[in-house]
Image (tube, rainbow, N blue to C red; front, side, top):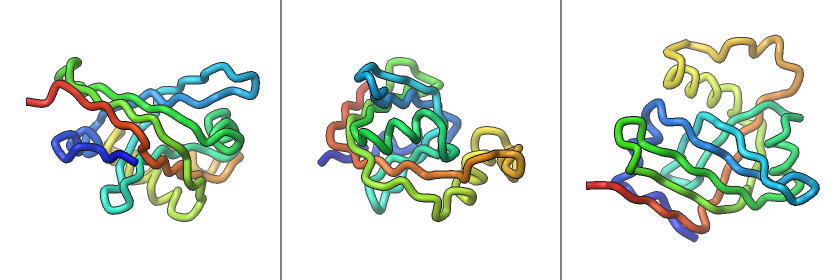
Length: 136
């Protein structure tokens, strides 16, 4: 298992977008831009989605995933993670998406929660391999 280097934790505290890769049923990759978070204590990368969306379906079926993000202020500074989903949980997922909405949208609540068909799901990813570069 690997961890996100402390010198890159700041990327998870600001408006940094990630590209989240999952595997389709036919074995091809599926990549989606996502909001991203990091649980330092549990050493888990967090992605939030709605139940039934493609990334949730793929991660439920095949937990091997990848994620990369680039510092919005320095395109040569990046974090890339290969790992495995060790939990898909609805517990705390609404609170988490609202926390992300404050960071990414400067909004108190994620818009449209009441209209969503599926429940919110937090995808918790165990980093098995981490590449980070461009830090001073």
